[in-house]
Image (cartoon, rainbow, N blue to C red):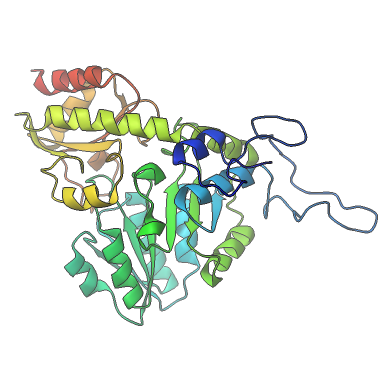
Length: 386
């Protein structure tokens, strides 16, 4: 495949995404990559391989365009795709050693939070959960010489707290730790954590990267092809949590519209959040783009061109009132997940465990590509119905 940036001249994120890190297939002239479902590769009479690929669990020609595009988007030295976002995140922690110390957010994707606490207890990895957006709390939690990894999720699901990545990177590096950032909600359209000092970026590719609610996938992007990255490569190869070729092809296809989708969703989310802020049925509208958000200044500094397509509504009257509002919506599917072209709403406390820090009155809203005025009207009607 030839690359749109093969001349050495930098290109914008829009051009990079539209061309998918490939201009065309040199042999066929195809403007879309082929799908290679083969699991293994034949050798010639001298037992030589025609390419460096040996087995599809190690390398696959269909996953390579998606990984090359992800690395280019994040400004990284390399990328790996995984069978799910959880597989990608878990791989980072599974390459730690017993006795290592980890700092992670108190509010984060609940499945990873639960898995991490259980994994830490069984694996002998010490885990501290703190409000990472509070730099004093983060500084107090990091143990110089013992902390090996600081994990951030920003904006954090589902309260959309924003952590200062550059400041957190400095704290982590001063203590001899690495910084990894779950940037699923921000996407590389709005935030590039590696440029702010992070060592590793994780995405649940199921969400915005694919953007069509039809692929489960995950990804890691690294700043450097260093020894920890080689451990991650080896772990993926031996653990086998690889992305299948059809899923990789769909992911790559979805990413080619990432910029236009995310910018539209961000603009619509800002429209909805602004329109609903101060509504008498709501205790709060949680969206980093609102000046009233406690971390708006940090978000404005490190998020470019928008604040993402996710917001949360805290409904007066607790869980019963929040569930009633969700039940009255017409344009929002009541479903888990986020980042697709369709708008979704979810009462998070109903799906998270009893010890979850998520407020019982919170509705998580994923804004899709529908008309933002119609989405706003639907939410208003649900809030104001008696």
